[in-house]
Each structure stands twice: as structure tokens, then as C-alpha cells.
Length: 184
Length: 280
Image (cartoon, rainbow over all chains, first blue to last red; front, side, top):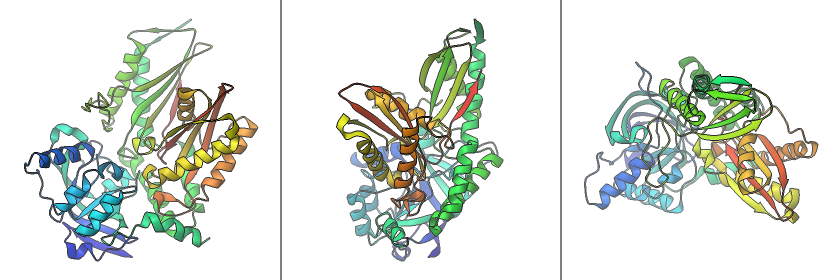
């Protein structure tokens, strides 16, 4: 089913999304990948404040290429999500509502998603030029020293993603292949 | 004896890094387009359509096809009658990578130490494979490699008794395990024989062969075809969301090996299989 949602995303919206939905996201989202996750995790361990409020926010696992002069951002597709699995449950417990990436997630992450009513979206890997067109504003707001891995605040318009794991734990990666093979 | 100034190497490596990241080679472009025509899953077809559109945007806007512009893998075949003048050849290659990734607005994805992990901020050092060949030419291949798919690659130390069936089983296992993480449709590079590291280097070299060319060895060309057909029956499909197009091509390289062994490696590449070649 095709749906349009606004980010930040409330729990009320999150629970209406089902695995397999084709969703266009508009609004404000944040980027963070390996190094930023590691640093956020360590910050929390030391009992300090994170540089962003996670409540209802969607994090895009992205490290973009540099923007040309006059452009908002460079190529901007998803990175493999499983590398963030170690950190994701802690962030979901803090209110993070969604994740955009690609590839499988661990059992721990899926359990935490169900507990916290969060959603995992996949963007099409390797379509970074196309996806960059949906990003209208980009600003580094923390961890600038990490370069491409810094935390960026993005304004997006109709960013196309697919719900892979929904807030009930239904997993499109588990079902889509069997469904397809049945059609043959 | 022919003298080549290393400035020529710097210039060519720089241009090739940029070219590889903005323009998918014609063999890859036509493989993706023809997969889109043949895909029988509606979502799969839509995703392949996005990949075609993505290639066009990359060309028109001069923006990388994928944000993972890779670690720069450089194969340099140097004619034994060539004399390099200027700087150290390894420094020249790294200078070309530095300039290409800077001037081409490519992502700097390399960290200085695998455990300390501080970004080198210029995408150096490159991974360089040198080979001495007859003659007085220099053949350069630049193949920027993304790590979403690199992470799903494997080395298997099989037994001679495992034979061709064991090899095929291992390739299929690697592709199944890679699933959606490696950004399917994938190109699968396989190295069979040699020793532990030779098999891995052959698997990487296999990815640099155009996907419209088969192995010159009849039994290997046959295995490439059989594997392609079997892998595309797995149903993984574009982005791992179901479909016919899981793998665009299987390329296999082989080498002699020891009586006691059957080493093999599977180097998986996403659909952004970048490889640019030039001869100086």
C-alpha cells in the first residue's frame, strides 16, 4: 500500500504502517551511521546528554558524498543496517521511532522495535543519486570531525522507502521471497 | 625501454576514480536495463527502474551513482620494459586517488587503522595489486569497491573431493547469506584454486571482467552459466524483496593449486560494479 507520512513520526502513525507498505517520508530526519552510533552509545554510557533528541525521530543510516557548490548534498543512499544492531535497542528505548537503512536486523533489534512500536524502513541501496533529489536541506549538527559520518539534520520531501519490519515485528525480508516463489 | 612519467599515472588514476563513480560501464548498464525488462516481480521491476533512473541522474548531475564511492582498488600491470620517471609509483597512485576523490566530490571512506579508525580524509591509501607483464605498456584498472557487498564476501578452503559441486554449493551459500545486505542484484566474482590469498585476489579480479564476457575455459564458462541460473532461482530479487534478478553475472577465475587443496573465494559486488580500464 502507498502511504505518505510526516517526520518526526508519532507512535500513532508508526503502528499504522505494515511490512510491505511503500512509504513517502516528508519532514525532518537525522543521519547517523557507524561512528556516530558508537559515539552516541559511549556518551550515554558516561551518563551524558546526546546531541539530538531521539523522541519520535527517524534516523537514516547514511554517509553522503560531499555536495557540489550550490547543491544541498551529494549521493545519499542507505548503508547496511546490521552494523548498527549493537546500538539500536538502546536508542529505540529512548524514543527513536524509525530507522532507514538496508539489509537484515538482529532478533534483539526486532524485539526492541515491537516493545517500542518502532518501524524499520529500507531505501533502495545503490540509488544514492536518485534519493539525493528528495533532500531539500542538510546541516551538520553534531560530530563534525567524523566527516561523512557526522550527524546531519535533513529536510526531506517524499523520500521513497519500503516498510521492511513493522511495529508488530512482521518482516518483509522473511516473507517476500516465499511470496514471490509462490507466484511462479 | 619506454619511459613514462609518474605524472601520467597520477592524472589517469584521478580521472578513472571519477569516471568509475559517475558512469557505470556499458556492460553493467545494459545488464541492469535488460534485467528490468525480464523481471517478473512488480516491486522488483520498480526497484530496477529506480536503478536505471539513478544511473541517468548520476550522469546528468555529475553525482556519484552510490554514496559508497568505495575504497580504490587499483590493478597495475607494468610492462617489464617500462621505466618510471618522477616519484615512487605507489605514491603516484595514491596521489591520483587523493586528487580524484577530492575533485570528484567522492566520499572519503578510508580509516587509517582498522582498530583506531580515524578517517584519512582523502580516501588513501588505495589497495594496489601490481603485476609485471611483457612489453612496454602499462595497463591500469581502477575498481572502487563498496563495503556493503565486500562485507558479505568469503574464502572457503574446500577439499579436492568437494569438487565442482562443493564450489557451487559454497557460492550459493555466500549469495544466500549476503541476501539484502549486499544490494542485489549482485555481480559475483569467484576465484578457484591457487592458495588462500590467490583465490581472493582472483575473485576480485573476476569482478573487473565485463559482465557480457564469459570465461575462455569451456568448463568454467559452463559453471558460470549454471550458477547464474541456480542463483536466480533463489528468489532474493532486487533489494532482497523478492524477484527473479538476484545476480546479474557470475565471473570465475581459476589457477593451479596444490594436490591437497581446493581453495576458493567469493567476492560479492552490488549492482554498482565499477571497473574502468586504460592502457598507457
